[in-house]
Length: 298
Image (tube, rainbow, N blue to C red):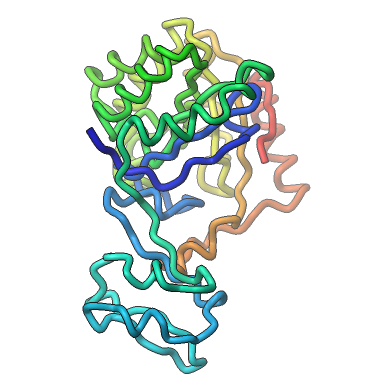
């Protein structure tokens, strides 16, 4: 069995306890306008072109089988999306790494070989392996087999999820997970659908299942100015979480770290503007008002 992986980050310290290896599985059923990893959304390999790194050597144009390489007014080489098939030939010869393929089909054994290489650090730091995305549950059996391989090795397993999967899939995932990093984006179903392309009914049902299971669940809120930081939305989040015995949340304030990736994929860039310190302080006061303890994740 193979699945598509777009990154494996070693020595991570923000994706669960201790030192961890985070396996990012490609593909997501949501399309959040603030996504800092737009390359994670597609379920297929994608070519990314960072023209700021281009040295205009022309190696890409020489090997492209589809005549999809084009030069801009500054002499930099980009691509014609209508002709490009994301074959990756140009990325293999680019000397400056201006062209990069996002997404590689890997077997469970190939992924676990990378994970196993840091196993000593897991045991010494109470760390383990984290599966993220995209949305990792969208990988189906590939994710389950990765988890089973990790369980056989005794690794602590963390799942970074937005909760969009069938109840049947979530029921299969639940007993395999030691800790959830569970996104909570917006409480209003229509607004959630407008923002991400899907309503939040099944997300909240799966979140309730995770919370009621007494698993270790960390709620992660990507906080966006004027979008989900309103009094009404935070009050609704608090009401839902308190009803399931949860009184702490992790907040990830709006940032622009992934902006260059939109250009590399020839996608329109998001218009989100990060908080000023005083603006973030006002938003955080709303959580305190509704008895939610906040930890800032940067």
